[in-house]
Length: 123
Length: 139
Image (cartoon, rainbow over all chains, first blue to last red; front, side, top):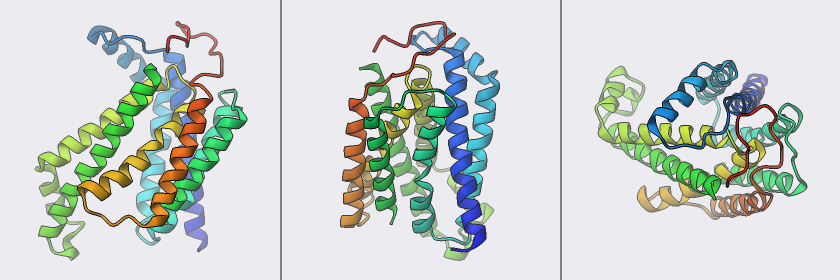
């Protein structure tokens, strides 16, 4: 694997993890969505669209997505997708250290299994 | 229960959306020469395909449901749980798109299934959320 591919995979993993963490922080600040009433949902949607963390999250997810498209121009998808499945572990680390979520050993075990499963599926 | 329903609906929408977009793009790509695969004409053709719009609509629905669930549940729960979509994607690709699925892919799907089962057993919310208007409970 050449240097540029490794760099792009690193960018994809960090951008996606940062996007997930920021969107979660934004949604937690907006508050729990507990209604199906159209007017209430519109109010919540307005709050979400004005949330700075949500904007930043979308920005990072877009960086991840376009980096993914770019790296596919020269690298095999069967290499890129399994390599980027490590994003699950980094997002959980973000959840633990940035969002202060309590990540139990059961969640860690499940996340590692998911990560290995995603890698196997795409090989 | 609400978290399970919302995540199930999200992964179902994602798998159906991916299948529809994939089927439409294969149909459009099959009609064009392979050298034209990135041509603007192909893009215009894709924009006129109802399957692309339905698939894209379902993928947007996935994102809305995924984002909504993050307003009350932990990211460390929602992210691995929603990866069950990979398993559905493999099953849908096999069933609706007649794609060959190798034993390695089925093994991967089984690992994801086990991983999701473990995460689901951990409960949707382990972390108290300060300064939010409503309690995170109410499953």
